[in-house]
Image 1 (cartoon, each protein chain N blue to C red):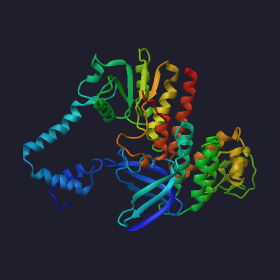
Image 2: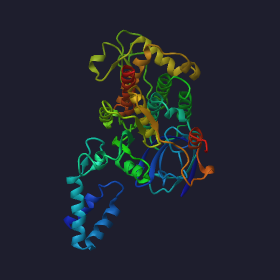
Image 3: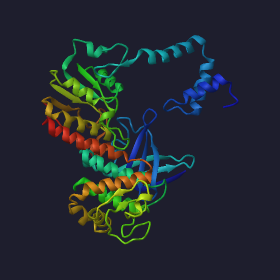
Image 4: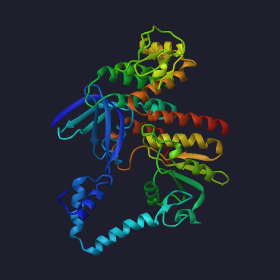
Length: 255
Length: 200
């Protein structure tokens, strides 16, 4: 039985049996790992609130070697990031980020740079506009996981960008002439293409400190469509964010 | 399971579809039942059928019940001006066991979960709004679980109900009775500090 230790972020969990929980972590040393936290749903559990979504901490586990699931020994909270759970908008956007990491990475595939990006993104989201942080994170997450869309030329014919009526496909931009032969393309304006390029290349502090303006909504649609193509389904957090926006409208109408 | 007689294999298969029951447990339960007297097994079968045939959701509060409206909704001694919102019928039972609450309930049958794609339309939120409109409810107690899903649901409901001139309260969060302060995590302790009360 091997003992493992690593810094990690809680990126998901579900109940198991009467009082246990299966928790998914994204760790610096081991990448995505899943483990059973025994009795963690009991009010006096030694884990207490440490296993809440987005919590950053120090994970200690046993790998029995007999199962894919680890045995979680303890998880000491380093940063609870509780503010992310205290606003529906922050919760939705942070969920979108961890969903991307969860679905685009394999189990036990270490990725220290992506771990750093995730913790930085979640920390930034406590104070910066959540939509902008999430877009910056997802644009860079695609790069880190090897799904970087090509934005300098049409991926089909090699025509140099910019060109009118561009679309974003699986590998990157597609020009108007090549678009009819490809399914599931999403229109992307030159402004959004430039913004996406900046999101993944400019220093993090500059990116989250500069408003995206009208391209923010378009980029969310484009990146969501790209994620949908990659993972084979629409990100679930997107539905939640849509509902939150609808609520804001209803609450505004009622007030 | 070809080496088991067909009825045994069928029962093992049926039992292992239950949550938390794997193949080994299903086999153990099946062989336990084979050893029990027929009356006892029949009683279990009848109880399982009765649950499906006689139990339904109360049309008012969505608690599980064998009569509609349920006993809690039709009890005139309960305060109809206060509604306690819980996630599941089991949470309602936990509240009832305290013996402290004498108001009415509303069961959402779940909680918002961004990572599972559970949105407001999947819960009994529309029905809660319909209950509140045109009634003289003075307080809504949000008693969802103190986890991400429960907090998100409480936040959502608080925002949605705010314009309705109803007092909205959230159950207190903090240290469990009999717990040790040194083992409490930062979030629990900060919530306990936030919700501290003066000792009279």
